[in-house]
Amino acid sequence: MVALVDCNNFYVSCERVFNPKLEKRPVVVLSNNDGCIIARSEEAKALGIPMGAPLFQFKEFLIKNNVVALSSNYTLYGDMSERVMNTLAKFTQNIEIYSIDEAFLDLSRLAFVGNDTQKLYEYGMNIRNTVLKWTGIPVSIGIAPTKVLSKVASKKAKKSSGVCVLNEQDTIKEALSNFDVEDIWGIGKAYSKFLKRHHINTALEFANAPDQWVQKHLTIVGLRIVKELRGEKCISIDEEPTPRKSVCSQKSFGEPQSDFFALYNALSTYIDSCAMKLRNQGSVANIMGVWVATNPFNLSEPQYFQSKFINLPVPTNFTGELLRYGFALLKDIYREGYRYKRVGVLFSGLAPDNTLQYNLFDNLHRDKLLRVMEAYDALNRKYGKGTIKFSAQGTDYGWKMKQEHLTEHFTTSWENILTIQLDKQVLPKLKEK
DNA sequence: TCTGGGGTCCTAGGACCC
DNA sequence: TCTGGGGTCCTAGGACCC
Image 1 (cartoon, rainbow, N blue to C red):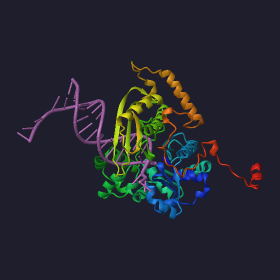
Image 2: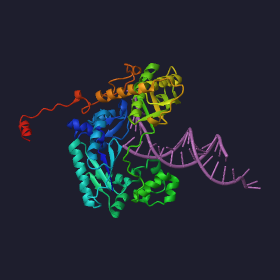
Image 3: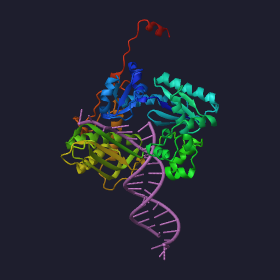
Image 4: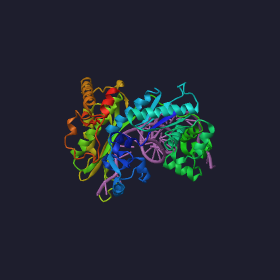
């Protein structure tokens, strides 16, 4: 059996842990630059605020309905996610962290739980209560024979007690017959439109579709989903995080930028953060690409998009070295006279850093640089990201993201730690305990 | 009308996820 | 005026090999 643990409205829930006044109120969390609405509390969903809606279209609506809008605080969400995952790991080591707010647990190796529906339910409840108590984050748990079915179960769980077990044939069938095909994990916009055109509207109807037809139109991926819906395990639980195959970073500017060095400042920051990710997973990059773009929504202004990719002469993850390539690439594609909205960088062709292929004409002292980067990472890990930087990143952040409603780094910065005033009557009782 | 057989590698594009 | 960011996988088709 597989359990999917899914945090409810995760970003909003994180904010609520540190600000109980947000409880029972409609709350939304915004994307970078306060651009779109990317997370909504149940109250906000009930008001009909759609996922991904641009903020400017809904500003008045939010004010009128007393909705709290917050800038996204990924430092906080990342740390809270780690706490949730660490809590889950106390229950089983067989866990796949699927995203910032979701994890699959392999229950098949927990003999004491077995296949008994009631026992599975109680176990799920125990997990749910523990996560809530230890982290303050409410979760929904779906338990079923396969990953796809556990996703179905978790959606059902959200509408009931928070835990749902789909175990017996008839309960599974019943659930699938009431489940819209477009809500199935792995069926997106295009496929659901296609399926509905062919009169497949529910998950049950999809599960009953002929294999050959499914594979022909939805590839092998679709066929796997169908089989999982029938209870046949096709998608395994990945306990080892597979190393990334590419790393990229691109962000919109708070204000459009025209100056080359403003673009390069931003690019340097993205390169630095990618290079750090590469070093963290022990990879070096063989291919590097840089692109710039104007705002595609602003049709009244001249548009420009350009990218350039190179094969790196020596695969590397050294920030300083990559900054030099970044500078040259940007120089190549930059054109004066445009108002740029974003710049981005991509690293691919990743290889393990222990298979380093040296270049005959390489004149860098790589052993020394390796130690420099190790010290660099150690400092930033210990005292916080950005403690030490490369000079290319500069000090002028005209391109900086807009974050007008940012909450504090409650769990990762001593300066932001909450102070709590204890009631005089509570204190002696606590001491007793 | 007919035009060998078997393979690899790369890329672009489309689908999907959170 | 204002519209997020970071990933994965699969397939078809072309170029190339013998």
